[in-house]
Image (cartoon, rainbow, N blue to C red):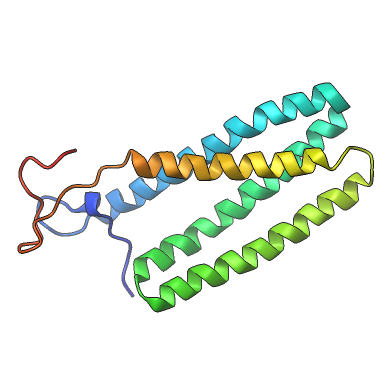
Length: 163
């Protein structure tokens, strides 16, 4: 079984630095969580102002379900990334399918609990904003990560590679 090795996690000795690899992945997860929360907080405030505390709770529950769904899937995605083969891709896709089904079921429970007390708009907004915030945070983190340039012949990082 292989482990996760990212390009920026290669030590000076040329061997993978697993601590750096997991640290890089953890930074991406933390940025995604901050993105989801940054999007969710204004929705909860507006829901509270427009429909009262119950609207805020419903929006926060929907967003929380989405955040938990993404967070639970991170270890599975990291493991599938480490495999880097067809089985890893199948594992990632199966994980997405299972989590999507669970997400739908949990959001249905939130809607059933709400039972007409608050417009379903707040469930949809809470879930959508948390999703876009999470994906946006992951994209921002991926776009700002270090990716050194490698010489294909030797597999070593080139001097003067952009940091």
